[in-house]
Amino acid sequence: MAAIKQIAAAATERFEEVMSLLGLSGGKNQGREYLPLNPKRADHKPGSFTINRSSGAWMDGATGDK
Image 1 (cartoon, rainbow, N blue to C red):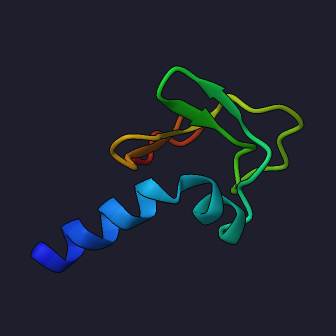
Image 2 (spheres, rainbow, N blue to C red):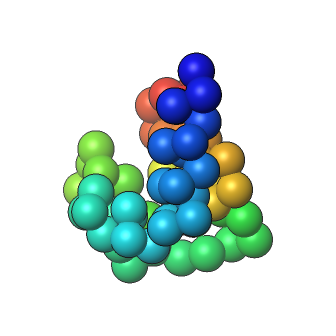
Image 3 (tube, helix red, strand yellow):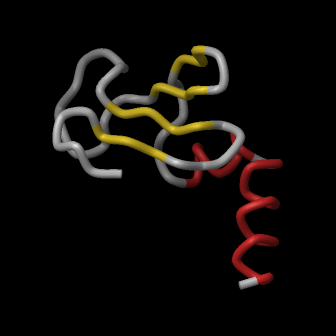
């Protein structure tokens, strides 16, 4: 479990770089939430998919997946 926490900490420290690697760059910041285009849909504007910049938790508002 310690390794997972270390990986998560490293990923959140390099948030912008990780988003770029995942193809999720170019999103909007709204407080601690990052709103990229939804990678599962052909969205034209951000908002239905969010990632918490502090915890890395994500939510797809279109499907309810977390």
